[in-house]
Length: 464
Ligand code: GAP
Image (cartoon, rainbow, N blue to C red):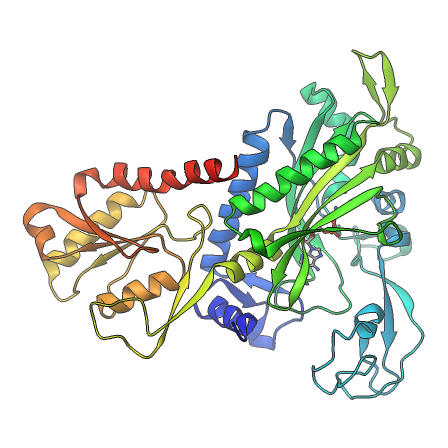
């Protein structure tokens, strides 16, 4: 589909999934706000991740660490030294770019860049030699703004799971293998942002640090890679749009023995959606060394002490939402309705998975100029609200309202019509098949719960 990215950006703004941060002031590059539907969608994604990895797994616990940490954390973790990208500056206009992005032709076709290593801003071809730029945002703890009070906004959530390793062990009595998990804000001062929310400067990461006995790490890596990939398939992403990318040894992060990305086929090409890394015992050893606290583990069964190895499945939530939107977006020329005259316009259908769709149910009166019908429909809406995320809508023709709901992925549209006033039934329209069935209002909650549950079974069967 041509211009898919532009279409997603437009839909996201028009329907309230994603807005540019501080837009009334001209916006800020790489910062995005989630609108009403985006925020709900992200909550659904969080819930599914927690259900799958905290509630359904036996030995993974959730924590919530702070975004600001002791500055020594970043020294020990290696972020101060290694969390850098090569930066070049245009000698003519002084705009700055990532040297590797400039060299791989990412800017070709943008602004004045017609070829690799050409500035998209002014077209000049001369740059300063690359220098390493640290991506962590600096800030100060307390009112004194000097070096000794300087710290950083965390660029990943992982570190508080390492610094709390003993606290978690002592408070839970978990035994290896076990995991500590976290979802939280992360900050990266990306040199070049772009591709909508794909490369942002502030985003949420969901990651698990899974601690295993040394020697068992390679086995658990494979296990987690499979689980992680299955998670994305169960989110409804199409199999043909996912693939694995094995990082060559020379491009591994300083802590990693092996990293495999799960890539998604974004409209701009294959790119990292999520990853699994074997972080070895690097972090626990480093924090033991820098803090002077022993973060090793005593294996009672084996009567031996060791630093556990760590397998880390990770993803950025906003990036996952972008992939989900791209995957779900469909256009139907002339529309899907055959009962009325096909219009020339394009109908948009967002085929979101039931777990992820921000609105599950729309409650609609057939017409809005019949007060009895409107009253009845609002009663149904109030009845359903405690059970499902619902929306009431009475504006425009019923066909137009169905289309508005299809465009944001609403699973079911319930319509109260004249028959409703006679026999207390209404129609349930399925987003994907557009089939309608008549149901008694008194049975609605049960019927809808069964319908929304039905897909969970399907997902399990499909992937088992
Ligand atoms: N703790 C490991 C870690 O942080 P990472 O690959 O640097 O690994 C984790 O980041 C995930 O965060 C990525 O798989 C990606 O989904 C997401 N991510 C990374 N940089 C991002 C950015 N600038 N904007 C949005 N998401 C990003």
